[in-house]
Every structure is written in C-alpha cells, then in structure tokens.
Picture (cartoon, rainbow, N blue to C red):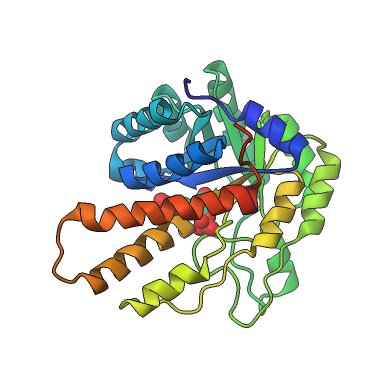
Length: 311
Ligand code: G3H
Ligand code: 13P
Ligand code: ZN
C-alpha cells in the first residue's frame, strides 16, 4: 500500500470515537517497534518527523525506512512533518514525499499565523498533501501564574472557526493544558485538562478533526526503570490515560506521542547496561529497546487510542 494522507483515517476516527496515534520517529528501531505493534493490532498509523529528527537522521534515510515499513506491514501509514515552522521546511517535506505537514504558527500573532498557514495550505493542497495548523500555545500550566497569562496559552474557541475557514487547514492542534516533554504537571497537583474548550471547539466545528500535542502519559514504569539504573529524573507527571481516552472519544482524532517512546527506549537500555556492563554490541541493547517500544505502543493502540483493528 502507498503512503496515505490522514483524511480517511480522521473521518473514520471521528465517527468511531477513537484516535490515531502519531508517533515521533528518528531511527530504525523506533520505526520497527511502532510499526510491528501496529501490524499485529491492524491499526492505522501516523509516523511524524520533527525538524530536529529530520536533521539527525536525514530525510532520505527516514523515507526509505518508512517505505520499508509499508512493505512489511501493508498498513495505511501517513508521514507527517511535526511542528514545521517555515513555509520552506513544509515545502521541502512536501516535495520529498511527506503526505501531511504541520505548520506551527502558534507563536505568531493571529493574523500572521493565518497568513503563514494559508500559504502552506495552498502549496500542500496543490500537491495532494494535508495540513495541520495550531492555534493556542502549548505550555506547562503553572499554579502560580496569574489567570490572564494562564488563559492566554489556551486556545480561544472563538477564534477557531475563523482560523479554519480562512486558512483551509485539514486539522487543528489546540491547547487545552497538555505540554511537551516529561514534566507536564506540578508534582503533588492533580493533572487537569480544559475539556470545556475541547467541547466548545467541537460544537463550533462539528466533524472537524482536532489534534492533541504533548500527550505522553510519562509512563511511571519507565521513569522508575531509568532511576533504578543510574538515571536521575525528578518527579515526572504526564497526561493520565483516562483523559486521553476521553479526548479520543470526542473530536480529538490525532494524539501525539514522543516522550513515552524516549522513556521506553532509554529505560530499557539503562537497565540492559546495568545488568550487562561488559556488553558492547549495539544489537544486544537495541533489541530489548525495540521490543519495549513495541509493547508500549501496543498498549496505547488498544487501551488509549482505541484504533486497534481499524486499519
Ligand atoms: O513536539 C516535539 C517533539 O517531541 C519533537 O521533539 O524537536 O526534540 O525532535 P524534537
Ligand atoms: P510528548 O512530549 O508528550 O510526547 O508530545 C509529543 C508531541 O506533541 C510531538 O509533537
Ligand atoms: Zn507537539
């Protein structure tokens, strides 16, 4: 099967009350772990590449690895640029075979975000590629920031309709309280997401696919593994799985996961070296790391995203 866009995946996910997993990739073992789990669970997939990942692994290497995954799995797979910040970067990914790009203009003013996003949408649609935009800024929500500053980082539902209409984006990332990385919520506080914003967006844009960034659960088992084998991570709190399931049952059709992949890989490799200090063949420690990613992704597909059996 050739690479696909996310259009059909999102339509089915919206109607079916589940979400597609968008997993960040930057090397062969990560791609293999994710795609092997998806194959066994018959799940559609989005493999996403950040600018940093593309720089690290090289566009052609990543595309060829993903092509190999297509051959091995025969699954519907969409290749997506994560957090594109310029027209040129988006164009380069579109010209290089990506089927989806994100243009993240969330750090610009509303008007500048619209202008940049519209420019990318025109080029992408002319080339059969879909576009994710972002409105609202993802930041850690701190208890002690004043309310207006805190609210400023959330998506304003009143702006979404105009943004979508004027840009022509195919999906929209919104900020409802998640943040990137392992430290999403203050230790000792209860994680909270603004489901009221999501509900309002859903009401204003019925049927339109919404994207949730910063959606790793920061799986405690892997943080513990890192700390038990020579690591030193402070208390790390991610998005609880029941909240992700709730979002997936609503308008959220794409859930972005990167940190959980990093934690699974690093925890497993740390444990391996701790238990086998004399080993030095990369295959010996990358094999269990790949297996850990596979099982972690399988768990997400079945218990968090609900997209197993939907390919
Ligand atoms: O949203 C950010 C992703 O986790 C990608 O991170 O830019 O370090 O590759 P990166
Ligand atoms: P996490 O850091 O929560 O995995 O979020 C990843 C992400 O949003 C990539 O765009
Ligand atoms: Zn993100």
